[in-house]
Amino acid sequence: MSKAVPSILKLKCPKCRKGDLFVNKSSYKYKGFFDMPEKCSECGQDFEIETGFYYGAMYVSYGITIAITVAIFVALTILNLFSITSFLILDIVALVVTAPYVTRVSRSIWIALMVKYDANAVKIHERKTHP
Ligand SMILES: [Zn+2]
Image (cartoon, rainbow, N blue to C red; front, side, top):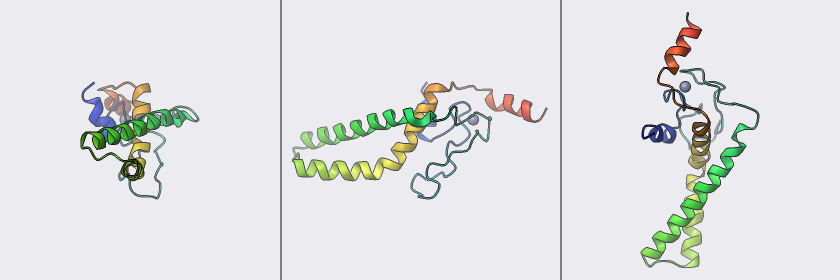
């Protein structure tokens, strides 16, 4: 489980943890922002498991957004800097800055919940494609 977390954060295929989930490695390039390969380049795992598969990732994204908002609220309160204005400004800036990564990592978390890690995934895939 512990190795799953860096794999999810690095937006890797949940099955082999080697292939990339997104065509663009940078979360901050606008072009092709949501583009995902159809299948994992390393193990052949299907990334679009069914039509609309990533609708569920919106709930994950919503949860992360709430967590960021709560964290800012708590931090400002602890530092004794809380005011509605400082809270709103910081929260909006934080959400805008993190939005591209949050969107992608939400998909990464979502597919990792559905697809189990398989240490032999790449080998099995190679045997199938190059018998
Ligand atoms: Zn893979």
